[in-house]
Image 1 (cartoon, helix red, strand yellow):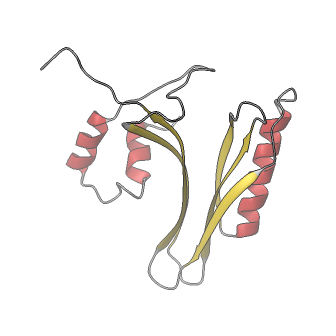
Image 2 (cartoon, one colour):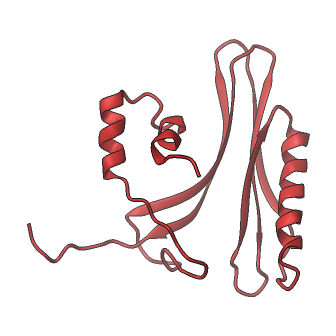
Length: 151
């Protein structure tokens, strides 16, 4: 698993931060590890944390394309599911990678009935200035927390 600070620095939202600001932001972040079956929150709860799946493909050469996509399947009864993210230089490659990844994940769970594969794919072409294709999907949020210990 990648170091959280490395992931933070790669996120387009934070890539312009100077080192001091990035370190300060990282100190405010909370690493959360869940066991199978644990929930971060329940649907409908207000939240103060947002968890996303993000795919991004940057392109800095004129004439080149960048494509990013997220694919998912959901259990037909519970709504729980699987996410994958892929990036490439062509739409076809991203769609094929999503299909292959999700098919392999579903094949590893033969007793789970997943619905159809869904995907959102976005592309961009570099015409001179560097560009980025990005797809972001929210999959979790956590409820507000209150510190009753006082200050």
